[in-house]
View 1 (cartoon, rainbow, N blue to C red):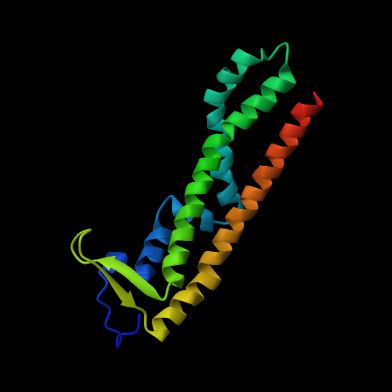
View 2: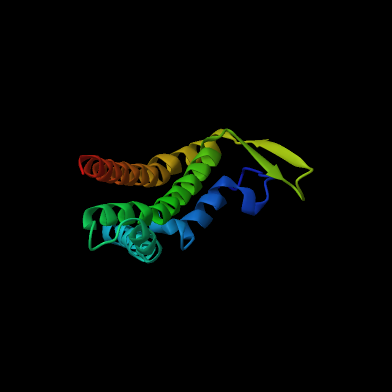
Length: 164
């Protein structure tokens, strides 16, 4: 931030610092990693979720008698945990995007009862919007594409279920 700008917002509530914290967080950084490192935790979560969804699906469809129904139901059930993790990633990055794009910053000085609003100067707003354009928006686009892929896979599984 420009040293000539006096900002009354506490350090931890400044949108630029919220962005930095998010980017450095072990969980939210996941969405910024290279493709393999991004996909790997999703697949690991999905695989671990089979430990719960597999036995639940086996109660409804005995794998030896109905392997396709068992597989489709267990795969759909195992998708819930990774989908929730991806949703949490998306919501966190979306929140920071909104904070950076807003021309004013709502903050609390010492507690919930004394909220204030600070209007960002043009240079701060420009800097924040550049960060959104070049850093945050690509992450949100990646997460949106991931949701589209997961949705297509769910639709394909539903179609396969319907055909059975």
